[in-house]
View 1: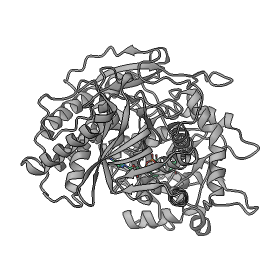
View 2: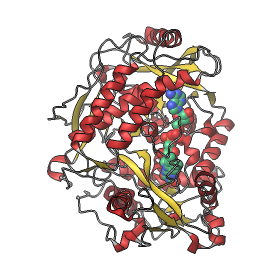
View 3: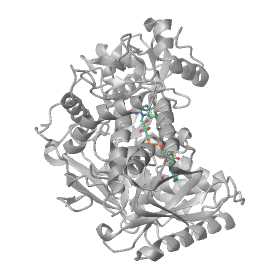
View 4: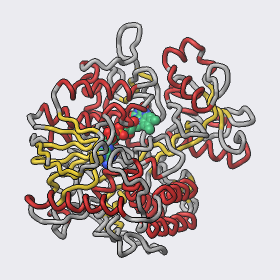
Length: 609
Ligand SMILES: Cc1cc2nc3c(=O)[nH]c(=O)nc-3n(C[C@H](O)[C@H](O)[C@H](O)COP(=O)(O)OP(=O)(O)OC[C@H]3O[C@@H](n4cnc5c(N)ncnc54)[C@H](O)[C@@H]3O)c2cc1C
């Protein structure tokens, strides 16, 4: 058993920033991570970090762009916190030694990004996330924060009161990938989930194989609602054969999209007459797929992104990494030919419901970064807004968990504020399929007192590992592939009712199949089969909640396009989708979006670029 004041799960940008903040606030902090910190997926971020740094720019303009980009589903208090605090966080990174790209006069460079009214994206070449991660990891090492790396967190130790609002999180249970040991980590003050994205729910994604949404699924099963899960970002420029990202930085520097007829379709077909390639990502992804569907795609699959006109010197200075990615993963030389690109899953706007301090509906449990939904991205995230979210909300969660008084939050969690039940009957049954068997993750609590809950959760996790290793049954890989295939085929950029229902049916079958899951490798050390089997359960729960939200939301907003509902419907749908697990029975409900900021209300307007 390990014991610390604050346990941070995850060592990407959000986890590292949270750990530094909690340590600065006087807490004894430990990070538990299934990957070594610098292997976290933040390291893959290429394009940059938005921050209103220049005199001609302002946090208010950044907030306006973000609310518009969110299609008015962002919560203004969280959006304003992001935009007010990202400049000081970027300056903090610079003071810690992050090697930002610079102008001739020494100022940190900023480039245009999609949906921004000012070029406010700071960057370090095309490897911004890598530099950010290393800069913060140095601070973690310098401060002596304990890092338990290669520990896969399986479960949260949460008490078992009926109402999730009465439950408390006392720690986590993790499996040591190197030794096979299962151990408890008691958190005297709080647990911060910073477990990143869930791209592996889809099979064409820019996300790493480790991005399986573990924290989101664990929190969900423990009683915390998932928020706005149907809003998935499909990035317009991913390499067709692998899903590897070609950064928006290419379009920010002037890269142009062409269809098979050599047309600059963003303008020539009227998708975004003002901003063209630099329209918001949802707009560009839909435009590309429309070109392909109308027969103007290349090989019926993709379009071209051309940066040759930028010249070798500029490309090598600002986008060198892109040349390597296109060459290594697609065999395309970006200096002499256009690069093939198509939309791919990239980012989850939704996640664990939190307020602007990172608190969840369960006492002692926090979330920050991509796994969280502080509601800054709403229905569509602007490029360059995820990295500032990590540092702003990572810091906030760290300080709060360490016990700093940060005042009353404006955003409510759980059913504390106004809410309404969903009026939707699913044709397919959802949730636990009954008789879940010992191999399934419960996530729900096992004891109601603080003293015994951690020990009891450890015992349950040990039983689960023993059972998975001992039994005979199906391999997780076939179940995972089926989930990824149906999600990619049916819950993608374009969505329609029948295919969403079909997906719920496929997921039901996958849940049934998972009841027989078993691990073929019986060893206790570096057993990736075991880890992937546990992750597959998380993918299943997330895929289901996401599809439920997508079916029930009968409108077109941001990244959520519905064939039968071609308009944004503010009268009925200015509200967040929440899905609660309720001991195996998913419940869909809604709470209103907060459009009132500090000094203004962000009135929904039509969104054109
Ligand atoms: C290719 C790519 C490029 C991007 N470029 C940009 C960009 O230029 N600008 C921008 O703003 N955003 C960008 N994004 C988005 C942004 O990078 C991510 O949203 C962000 O880095 C996620 O950070 P995080 O700290 O939340 O998670 P991650 O960096 O993914 O870290 C997650 C951590 O959680 C740990 N973990 C997960 N599950 C468990 C478990 N069960 N037990 C223990 N540990 C666990 C992992 O080990 C890891 O340390 C990009 C995303 C991608 C995929």
